[in-house]
Length: 329
Ligand SMILES: NC(=O)C[C@H](N)C(=O)O
Image (tube, rainbow, N blue to C red; front, top):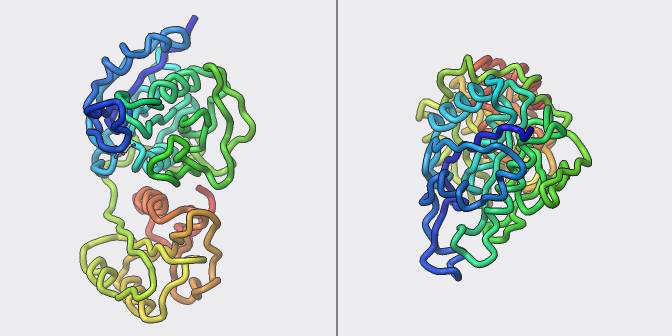
């Protein structure tokens, strides 16, 4: 018998449409409904019994915290159903890494949850969505994909939803995980080479079934000539944590340090992250994190550090606990 896979559609370029076949970059995202996506790919019926649900129809840069909660709650409810073997989520590429990480942290299931997106709309020459979706459904229906956390299938690769980031804005090979892909999909068969070691899904201390809202967390970038304007304003905006996306090893300009100290003194958690795509921030290197009571974001880019901070703050605002969470997830 074939596995039962539910496709939750949220929009993005994988549901996009352009005026002509040469429009690979100028097109409208989030136009095509999930039923049409499924009907356009009859090959799906060979690897799984699929059914679709339209959860949202938006370009992913416009998704909100409330959208994240609604989606994760739906994924969690479906994963509890005995007649569901796996879940695929079609999504825009711009923020799919954030949603993937959020689900990794909050949905308690061993069943495969596979994110999928495309860099070109379905109307374009060499559109990548159909094969990516076929790959996602075949991975979601595979027992080998169980217990590996939330995944992303793009460009023949199976990526860890925790590690993966969009590293190129145009190419179909846009997604890279700095610690390597987990596997590959070829002709609907998945091949595995590694598994994540960070805590996720079943082993997470966070559970979407008990999370009702997310605290506001914002990001301030570091760069040459940076002024304290953004940090000072954010400090007064009601946020619970501020991610500093600094250059290099998450370094912080001398003239900004007093502003970050003030933010911390006002009870806001300061998390030091790096804007460099790869690598990880080392505690007490560049800045005395122990002395300032700051947290470091480990290997998470600012946008992923924000996701973990929001989730962690639903349980604790103790900086020692938060640092433990940043090491473990
Ligand atoms: N390729 C894409 O999906 C980009 C689009 N802006 C989105 O994230 O929805």
